[in-house]
Image (cartoon, rainbow over all chains, first blue to last red; front, side):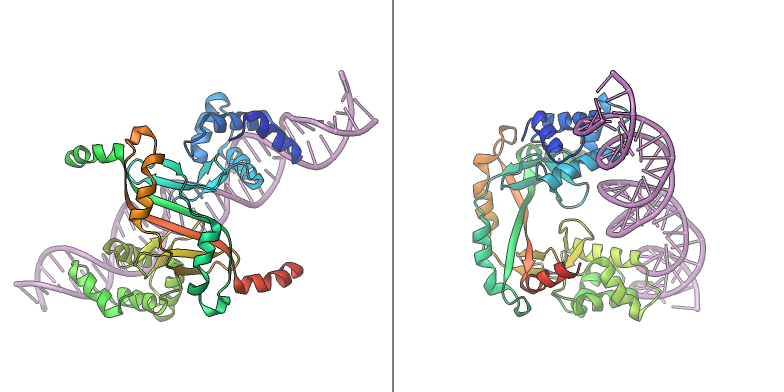
Length: 156
Length: 156
DNA sequence: TTTCTTCTAACAATCGTTGTCAATTGGAAA
DNA sequence: TTTCCAATTGACAACGATTGTTAGAAGAAA
C-alpha cells in the first residue's frame, strides 16, 4: 500500500485533480489497509470528516485507483465489492460467518495454472488460453468464529 | 449432471411439488449442461415453451436446487450469477472477451490449501481456519477470441 | 371431490452501482 | 493574483440482478 502522498502523485500524473474529497478518501483507504473495505465502509469513514461527500464520489475515486492498478477490486461471492490495497499476487481467505477477509500467499503461479489447462480445454479453443489473472477464494470458518459457533448456534 | 427425472426425485424427496413449470426448468437445465447459464438464460429457454413462467420462479427453483446441492451457484466476477450443473470439485476458466466459462480440473485439494494457511493467518484466528470450499477462477483470453482480437480491435 | 398446502405470477421493493447534469472548483497559464 | 476551462462534485434518478409480498391457482392426500 502506498502512502496518501503517493496516491496524490498518481492522480496528478494522470492529469486528475486532487480535490479535498479525494484526499479524504485516500486517508480513509490508507487507514483501512488490510481490512478489505467495501466502498460503503470507506464512505462511512470519509463522511465522518466531510459529511457532504457522496457515495458516488467514493465509487468514482476507487474505480480510478483500480484503473491505475493502485488498488484491486475484489468480487468475493455475493454482496458488495471490496477493495484491496494489496496489489501483489496473492489469494483470499473469507470467513463465511463474520465475513472478514485475509490475504494469503499460496504458491500458485500463473505459469503453473496455465500449464494445467491445454489438455482440458475443448477443441473450439484450439486448446489455447492466455491467462491474464486468477483468483483463488477460500471459504470457511475462522478460528474465532469456530469457537463462537457452538454458543451462537445454541442461542439461535 | 443428473437427468431431469433425477431432479424430479430430488424435489419429491424434499416434499417439494413437481409442477409443470419446474419440469420445464429442469429440462432447460439438463439441455444446457456445461454452458454455465445465468438464471436469465434458463428463463429465456423456459419461456419458449411456457411463456407465462416468471423469472422469479426460475430463480426460486434454481435456488432450491442449489440448496439441495444439485447445482452450484457461481459468482464469476461481476454480472449475473451462473449456475453450474457440475457439482464435482473443479475450477473455472473464464474468457474475458466472450464471457464463456469452462470447467477444468486443476489438482488443488482442500487439504493442500488448508496446509498452506496456518502459518499465514493472523493471531486472532489462532492460526486456525476450517476450509469448507475454495473457488479458483482463471481469467484470460480463449483461443478463439485471441484469433479474433486483432480484427475486432481493428473494426471498433 | 374435498381439503389443505404449496406454488405461481404480477408487482413492487431492495441492493449495489452507475448515468445525467447543472453548479462548483482545482490548478495551469497569463 | 487573476482568469479560465476542463475536471469534479452532489443530488437525483436509473439501472441490472435478485428477492419480498400477495392473492389466486394448482398439486397432493384422503
